Length: 117
Image 1 (tube, rainbow, N blue to C red):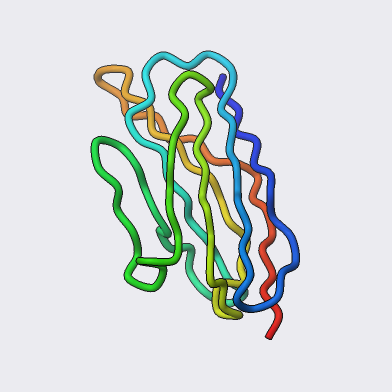
Image 2 (cartoon, one colour):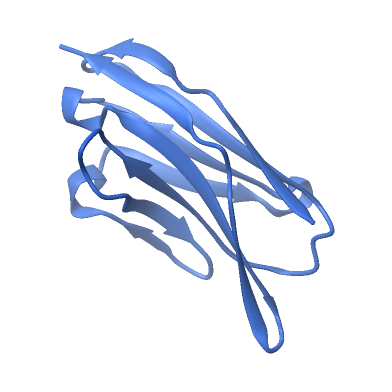
């Protein structure tokens, strides 16, 4: 079994920064991709950023957020700068692991990010 543990959420003023971390542990074979998603109250969960061979960002965070990965530690980070109130959400870490022929999908418990105006 694989566990994802997120940390780094909190309350910050608009224009501030936060860094989220997500550490994967357990029976990990080969990580295919890691990503951050978020879900604001009353809204659907959306992809924020993902990292595999390339990095992909939602248009709303391009130029402000940076995703990075430490393969040795099975950890993914999300550096969030110039935060806006609309970034307020629960942020979820996601890991995809391919064990042919099945692509496994794992989720963290979520960490709250609140940006005050």
